Image 1 (cartoon, helix red, strand yellow):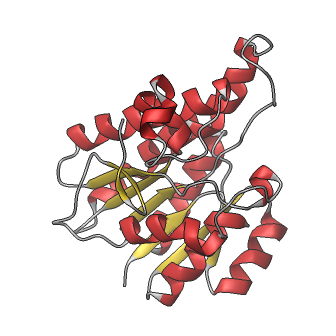
Image 2 (image 1 turned 45 degrees about the vertical axis):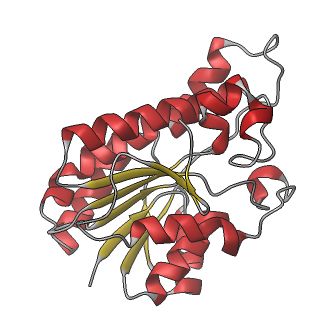
Length: 235
């Protein structure tokens, strides 16, 4: 049985990913910042709630210690926790806005990955999935019309988009550093969740498909890539 941790999993894509992986036979730790919400969400999908705030070093270390004691290893890590940040134009966006978004979307993924590296190393086929966005594609940002088919619905979002571009580079760097692991970034597409006021064009089931697919790859799967459900995306 594969042991899996999904951060930010009390609702939306994280919760649907947890449900699908439990159905696939994974023992899933459902990461949550709030203990009550975590227990309620985990109970709905048959997962194990894990208290973890990706913005707190102590919280992340405590979560890693608990998984070490209970499971002894981690086979799959899904860095799903993310925030959109303050809605603001580029002219209105401040460095503090970026710091707030990066603390969850980039530094949070690094905190969690770093803390769980020893547990991932104990797995025979470790997998890391970083939930990115098509808004993190530099190629699309530079020429949206030319890449409309690969990332439909691209829009300017300085804090969020740049955080996902940074997460993409983090993904590639980890993949180079740990060639025995399968480490990839994925774009669920514009999915209708609480995250965007349910304004997305894709269902949660559709959005979670690429996360689940990449979480289930084996030791011969791709690494250092950037994928949507339709295939590889331009960096």
